[in-house]
Amino acid sequence: MVLEVTLIDVLPGREDDFVDAYEVARPLVATAPGCRSVRLRRAVESPQRFVLLAEWDSLEAHEHNFRRSDRFAQWRALIGGSLAQPPVAEYFTDADSKR
Image 1 (cartoon, rainbow, N blue to C red):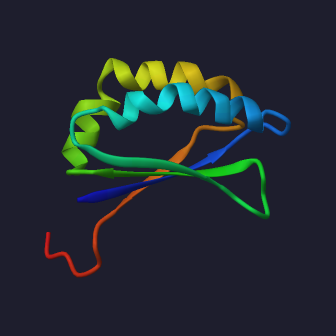
Image 2: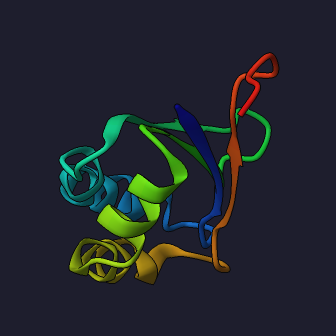
């Protein structure tokens, strides 16, 4: 399992627009083959910052079933107007994983 952690900075004043767009776009990620879960959290101290946490079967599942698919283009089209800058993603596995 791989945890994708994506930091998303939204334009000031566009936070509600982003959350609304996310709700529409969420199924594009959540129903991608290999996606186990996806959730969005908002920073307390910086209300324009969000973190998207998505669990994938593998990095390959994320790349092939989402990033390189039409789902990703649709996702970006829906949320893109609210973004202050491109999101930054990093991938994590369990610390005790031998893979």
